[in-house]
Each structure stands twice: as structure tokens, then as C-alpha cells.
Length: 246
Image (cartoon, rainbow, N blue to C red; front, side):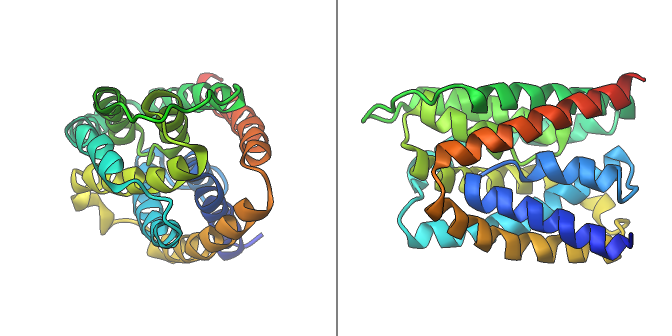
């Protein structure tokens, strides 16, 4: 199977997840870049940030046109994570590859459990203090693990901040974009060394997939999509943990 075909297929799945769920792109992108495409964990996390940033901007514009982005809340949430994201990005280079993979698997497993749980009924008033706390924690995860954080941002925006699901998905894309850019800034020197014959097709397919994901979300209930994705995510976490330990 050719590298180009694998990159296009993986990119389409990443974009589909981001467009439909407002997250999950990096959780799929990092292992796809490591295992079938052969990148090192460090290169994969940097490449993931590039791909997810480009895809999230595209998906964000589409959700914003539908009025499903809470700009003030999203910017507050994201701003709290910029410092931790930059610090985490600086520390990532000092983390052994096996530990980075195991940590990623652990975070993916936690995210899967959150997504499988019943979504709590949102409240009418957004809680800024909780948005800041949740955003700071998410920023740290983004920096160290090279993930946009949407797979954790959506549950946090619904259960902690108090947004409704559709607004949380759109707002999550704003958070992902800001956090990914902040984490990517600390890795700017390594971007030029990436294999763009892989990253380019991957990113292009992800951008197109994000558009399809948004259309899919309009036809299938968010709960059904979220549960299906959580099961795939949990299986992926088990696989990555086994690879890191064995």
C-alpha cells in the first residue's frame, strides 16, 4: 500500500473527526503518522500540530457561519492554555519516545471514558473561572503531547463551562486552533525538517474531510457519533500502550 494512499486515507479520517465532533484529529493523526507512515513520535507530534491547525481553521469558519462558535468563551478558554501549551512544547523534546507514547495512550483512554459518559445537562450561565482552569490544563496537554485538545475540550466546554453540544463543537475548533499555534511556535525550528510529501497530502485530505464531517454531523445525532468515536479511541489507546510497554 503506497504512502500517498495511506496519507490521504488517514487525513480524510482526521478531518472527518474534527468536522463532526470538534476534536479527535490529533488523537488519530499522531498514531497514523507514527505507525503506517513511519514518522518518529517527536516528528509525528509536530506534524500533527501543523495538520490540525490547518484543518481546524477551515472547520472553524464553517461552524462560525452557522453561529455555533462562542467567541468570548472560546478565547478565554484558549488564552488560559497558551502559557501551559508553550511550556509543554518546550518540555516535550526532553521526554523519552516510549514515555511520550504511553502518556498519549493514557490521555486517549481518559478522553474515551469521558466521551462514553452521558453528557450532563448544560446550564444557561457560562462559568468563566472554570473555563480558565480547564483551558490551562488542556493547554499543557496540547504542548507536551502535540494534540489540539478538542477530544477533551468538547466534554469540558459542555460539562464544566456549560455550553450546549453544538456550540461546544464549534467553540472547540477555536480552542484547538489557538492551542495548536501556541504549541507549534515552540517547535518552529523543526517544521522545515518534516517530510512534506507526506504532510501535504495528509493535510489536504483532512481539510476536505472536515467539510464532510460537518455535513455528517447534521444528519447523525451527536451522541451516536461521539460514542462510536470513543470506542475507536479506547481501542487505539490500548494498542499504543501495548506498543510502548512491550
